[in-house]
Every structure is written in structure tokens, then in C-alpha cells.
Amino acid sequence: MEHYLRIDEKENAVDSLQKATEFLKNTKNSQLYWKWFIVATHHAVYHFMLLALQNTDLSGIWKEQPKKGLPKLVDYGLSRKVVDTNNSENQLVNFTEAFMRIQKPDRMGRYVNTKPFVADTKHKEAATYLNTILRDNFVHFSPKGWSIEISFIIEAVSPMLEVVEFLVLNSGRLFMDEQQRNSIQSDIAQIRLFFNDYKV
Image (cartoon, rainbow, N blue to C red):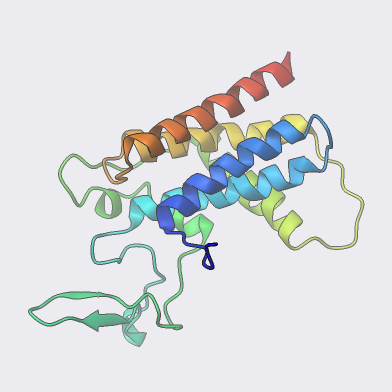
């Protein structure tokens, strides 16, 4: 029997997208699964953005405060420094900042054949809908009765699937094996098909 849960940043993102797909299918049995679909989708999008922003020295995904010397680094000698991922002072950027960074050439274009995401109005609005209106309200749920149009959830998620698709397939910054890429594409296709059938 295995006594440890082993997971890395890639598995984390891929698993969240898989769970979102499963939760979406379960909405046919219980409307409450829409809540879990939103939380899992947000988690997946956020962590795919972090994966795309992460540099080989583990930089690119942290809050930066030069005056405080953040993020904190580990010096391995021979001019090789990487971000100290175990230092409690280092904090990941939030969803909104990650979304801003994936649009910046200086963040996304640092390697050969890499490029930033070009967001239009629908992507920017969807990021706000998913992060602030939907996910935050569920994760920090306050006493209330809340009715959400399913069409609004679809409107918030659909453009963010395009973000994940770009990061995985076209940004040049996400290195996934064939099985992971196929899994991601399959999940996105299943979510889109579900959305299309729902609208009919």
C-alpha cells in the first residue's frame, strides 16, 4: 500500500481540469456540482497559468518586492540561484496577477518560440467573472440565497478554456508529454460539448 500522495505542479493542473470535467457531468444528477465545477475550473486555469509563467530558476510566479528582497533565493554557487520555494515569505501571485502576466511579452517571451496570450474583452471579462464573482463567492460563501444562471457560468468558463488551450498548445512555455496534452484536449472538448448540448 502506498503511504504517500505524490503530486507535482503539472499533475496538479491536469487533475483539476479532469475533476472539473467529472463535476460537470455530475451536474445532470445534482445542480450543486456546478459549484465544484467552478472551483475545480478556477483551480485548473490558475495553475496552468502558473505553469506557463514559471521559469527554469522557478521565478516568474511569485510576488516581487525588490526592497524586501522578494522572492527569496537559494544560492547553489557558480552564479546559480533559484527561488526558495520553501521560504514562507515567498508568495505566489494571485489569479488576477497571473492572468495579467501571461499577456506580457517580457514574462512569456523569454525563450525561443514562446509568446504571450493575447486577451480580448471576452477573456478579460471571463477572468473577472470566474475569479471574483463565481469562485470567490463559493470559496468565501457568506449567508445568503444565491441564484446563478447556468448561461452565466458557461459565459465565464468558455473563454478561459481558450486560455488553457493556448498555454498548453501554443505558448511554447508549457512542456507536457503526449498523454498529458491528450488528456487536456479531451477534457476541454468534453466541456465544450456539454456546454453546446446545454444551450440547445
